[in-house]
Amino acid sequence: MTGRVAFLVFDAVTLLDVSGPLEVFHQAGRFGDPYGTVLVSPHGGTVTASNGVALAGTVPPDAAGAVDTLVIAGAEHLAEEGPDEALLGAAGALAGRARRVASVCSGAFVLAALGLLDGRRVTTHWRHAATLARRHPRVRVEPDALHVRDGRFHTGAGISAGIDLALALVEHDHGAGAAREIARELVVFMQRPGGQSQFSTALATPPARGDLLRTLTEAVLADPAADHSLPAMAATAAVSTRHLTRLFRTGLDTTPARWVERVRLDRAQQLLLDGHSVTAAARHSGLGSDETLRRAFARHLDTTPTDYRRRFATTAAGGAQAPAGP
Image (cartoon, rainbow, N blue to C red; front, side, top):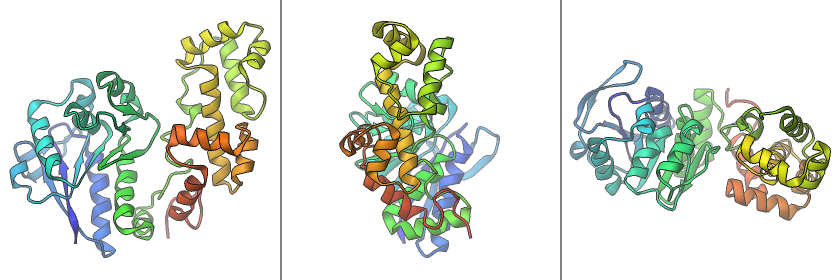
């Protein structure tokens, strides 16, 4: 049997943060890789999820037994108010004896409050990412990742991304084949189209304020490979480069160059998943050279274009754009 997985739950917990990953580990047992699982709460007994469902029979931390993997679920109030002392105490006790520690959604706020994520790369639900970064400035928040591993700590994005996180843990323990079987059984993506992003830059970008900025961003999204240098965009908009930079800062909270690079990276990711070579993806996305593409992947995704394509191919065999199924 694979090591025991403890789920830390509490009143007002988001149920899918618990039930999604729990079902992944349950299915692993059906395919010959059983995990022991236990629900743990700060005081034991019954806790009530945010949707009113009762989780009965939870045990306190000192009765949880040996813990290999700790999964801390999320809840809306963790981002709004922060975790209370009882929850922090339970999490600290369990994390101290677990081989690896994972959080789903705003569960990352618990680990961050304990100081366990200082200096580490993490993710959380996109809606809470800015709050996490502001409240814990020593944590390196990656707001668009589905899940991130840094050392023994694994953090997942919001709600259903807990399933992605659990599949990644199973894959790490038992290989891609085991995780793929579970994904097929659950009729979910082994790796979602687009790779590890919660959403693309186009969807993540709020509507640009002002017709000028909206026109420019729409032009970049329509043809990322065109000339979108700062001077070229400024000339198109008939404004100075300084004024254009100010518009991006005010409207999108970034610089023109950074925003264009993320759009081009999105396009390169999709090109790689469509079967294009690294060189072709670099050229057609507008990133230009293989080296520029590699730097962008390292900076934003902490991987290489080749590894990105290979990982997706090995975990979505039989159809990159289709959910795993029979």
